[in-house]
Image 1 (cartoon, rainbow, N blue to C red):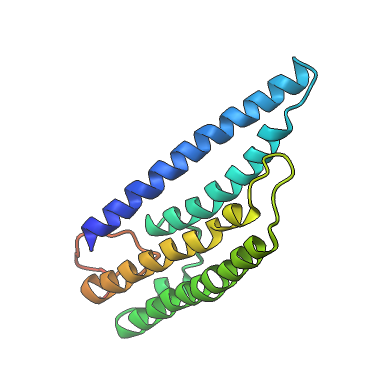
Image 2 (cartoon, one colour):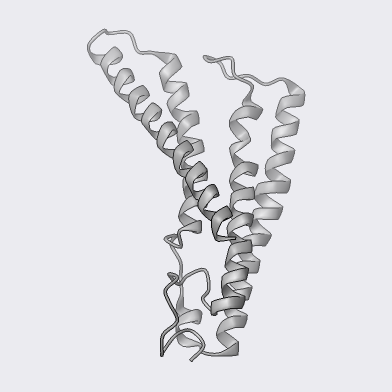
Length: 174
């Protein structure tokens, strides 16, 4: 599982870095073309918006996988033993449920309906379904990370809000 997680991390990191680099380039060109050339580029404006969507959604999934997402960890912090395992399992379940229902099911419905209607972006003439596919793609990544969280919870007792470290006295099961 660790090798698969490392591979998914690498792919997501690569996509995010490339998309972010292109996004920054688009924004710089947009500013340059608007204020220096006097004719703003509509293509780079639209491309920057679409890349921002991809960077935000895939970046959120990647951040979740790195256990660096924002979290309110009051219950996992104040519970110990079996109740802590139950709380962490419920947290993982809630994340997975959201990823399944909203991101995969809802996102895929959005993508398929948008592709069926033939909606394209004004400047790039890009099918909007291609832009929206970031939603189910990041949902899949989130589900993959949830699977890893379940494995970690079963093997080490550490939940999705805890950085993985070698078990030590005073750990999550104590």
